[in-house]
Amino acid sequence: MSKYRNNLPQLSDNLFLTDSGLETTLIFHEGWELPYFAAFDLLNNEEGYFALREYYVRHVALATRYNTGFILESATWRANPDWAVQMGHDAQSLDNLNRAAIDMLRDIRNEFETADTPMVISGCVGPRGDGYNPETMMAAVEAQSYHSQQIESFRKSDADMISAITMTYPEEAIGVTRASLSAGLPVAISFTVETDGRLPSGHTLREAIEMTDAATGNGPAYYMINCAHPTHFEDVLKEGGAWLERIRGLRTNASCKSHAELDEATELDAGNPRELGEQHLTLKRYLPNLTVVGGCCGTDHSHVEEICKALEPVNNDLLV
Image 1 (cartoon, rainbow, N blue to C red):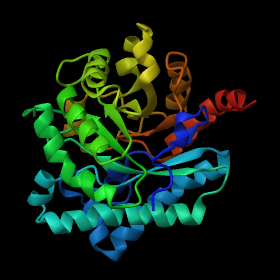
Image 2: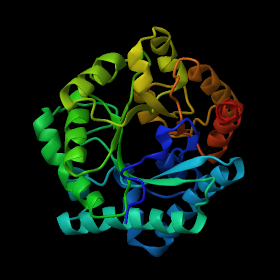
Image 3: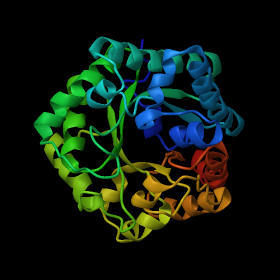
């Protein structure tokens, strides 16, 4: 049974951590081959299963150490029909793997959750196409139909919510939101931006958030930004506006490189974890409701710890 579907604890003022760059950690640090960046396929074998589990446990240990909440994000960013077909999975196999990913997180929560470290299980939905370059865009109604298959798998599981990660244009975000709400699941929408602070589609963050809210009746529980370095979007946040109150989460990249440069990289750019943490303290000034933090490409648990350490005094002040 889900635990927090009707009462997401990260909507409070308390700090919640999440994980980091799952795929880049597995590929560059642990030597796994992940065709199409598809980590969910590791659930097919025992060695892969335990590699995923150990990755999550390293991050959960941070929440335990610093008395924060934690968002357990499933390894299913690529577990949607188009990508699954390329990997030889049919609809039933895909359903089984999506639900197995949630089962793993449920078991981790059962083992590690405490009153001081509430753990929310999130079913991760990724883009239908490339996460860096939306060559083919769907209308919102098509996106809703397409993503409903994966979201239905999560509805039947112990998932508390949906997180749509690396959304590159508003219509897909609108479709995911509608599909999630139809399934009775709260949803967080996370947009990615280029080095100019705009979505790959050319929309501004403000436009994307306001379009999604307008089309769904403020449907998302909150918004996030992921797969971008703080320097790519800090100036956008400085512009101000009520729309910034809708952003509650950040999953930033370690590297300042563009998406195109990262796509061609053969070595990991891990950046500077401490500097990344300090940059989050600056971003917090523009994002009054920031409560969910983690990493994306190039980051690992050490980056998440530095972000937590930077924000921990802010979090403690909120708890006084």
